[in-house]
Image 1 (cartoon, protein in one colour):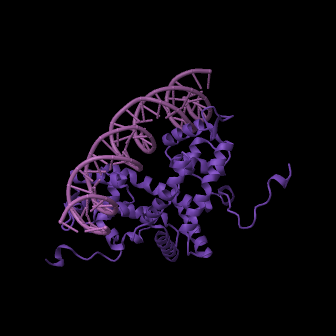
Image 2 (image 1 turned 180 degrees about the horizontal axis):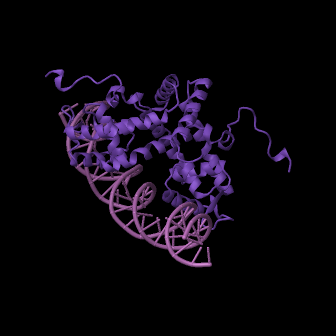
Image 3 (image 1 turned 90 degrees about the vertical axis):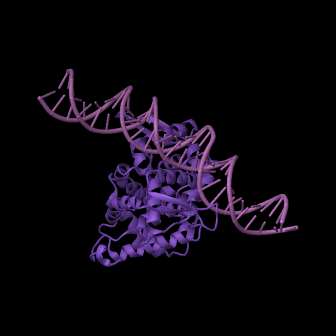
Length: 162
Length: 162
DNA sequence: TCAAGATATTTGCAAACGCATTTATTTCTG
DNA sequence: CAGAAATAAATGCGTTTGCAAATATCTTGA
């Protein structure tokens, strides 16, 4: 067996995943990290009767007042149909209130109720904890740079204006 | 309405998500980014008959020779039971081969077939593209620092030894 | 050495998901 | 302004998911 049938790649060839290794491929690392992040919240969420889409909707609503459902879907990274059903459950549980938009009868704006806000405030410390566990041993400067890079990346690949 | 019923928080209180904003909360940004990353691969994956768990399993197998199923689950961040079914499909499609471990009859080692390797090599350029789109306009130094931080974060929160 | 406990994987089952479609409404265009 | 196209959200339906339990095998300790 010689090199004849397997010539060396030119210098600018696409490296294989095997060559760079999983741990130099950023999306892989981000998936691993988010997997642990989600796992660390799962139990608390289950106790509060929340699924991931429900929790993400509450998180968005804790920051944005009365958004349209389609905008929640973008912020929360949840399929519109999945979100529709999640909101149905949240409304049934008294955590949110849906109101037809004043200027467009097709559209619905969503508001957090007191119950919803309280529920999210119960969960939030765990989310904050999970984040600080991630950044353990990482300096403020490094963390700031990291978040700055994330923001640039989101700008690079997002489809929506926010 | 006065401040009496709503005193200012002490300086080191846990900031609310609303205060820091979604775009300063790293897990939110990472979710948004991974959501777009996954969306950008979905069409190509569908054409190859792959789901996310199947694709991730192939990716792991392209890097690691003959891992145990439980280890694939960790690397690929896929539930055991979900992975079990994904591997069943991959085997049916001739992309992988499962072999009982020589020293432990409970355990199964998984190997990529030529078909499986070829399939992943068809997908990989899209994955590489997706990554470089993320890093567009970001310098090599910044990218290296970013990946370095990701690696530290994974070490911080992982449950397994790798 | 054998029962009790661990570990690896699969499977049953109900819930969740996502695509495609439907319904209702608004916007655009000729 | 009428009809066509676009948009917002909900829903039908088959597939996928994940928890828990089952199955099979290995390990440990009395």
